[in-house]
Image (cartoon, rainbow, N blue to C red; front, side, top):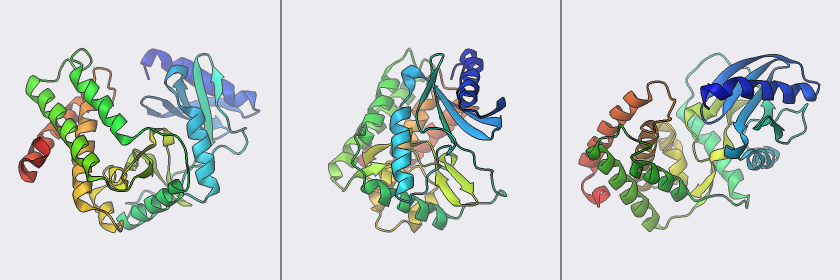
Length: 283
């Protein structure tokens, strides 16, 4: 979110909570990306705020409710508020349960894999319209091709990312494996460690595709504890996801701390992976 918008976004969240009788005298910014995530105090509510034009809040709310009802490990909505999107001053606000972090500890790959399996099992039972994972790949391809949006990307690096995205999108698609509803980005940043176990958040990235695409966002060891995985597809998906997130780092509007440094580092990892894997992913 643009820095100039943050004060208005915070005010919108506090206004939405206050209108429901939830006391919100202060707000702590927990995350600032495409949307703002806040902890409102003293009511202790988690608020997520996005510009009206950029939000899919209604879809995310409905999906979270349906998954929670089926026992999936997802974060719950705030029980003291009506489960809907609240519009304030050009922003959409959603209110969620705030989970106090447990004592920091490393999440075991087995627990991570089991939680993701449960989430996938619940998602298989849902029939909701969502984009295909290749739509996300196409968005990355468009960004690579747009020199105005990625002005600092060198020509050779632009060609590397474009070729990798195109070839892996084709290779994975041609495998014709089973597909289902996915989280879309179940990386560690979207997993909460709570007293109730691991819970997934940020369902706005849901898409359809092979489960290997989701696993490609998790630590590598998690894939070793998820049964029935095609390791070749997982390897290809990991490289595809790496190319996608590398592309985001070269967006001129990217606000991830040290994002450009990471982007340069990941370009090196892509080259090394392509050298190891042979010519298949170059074509």
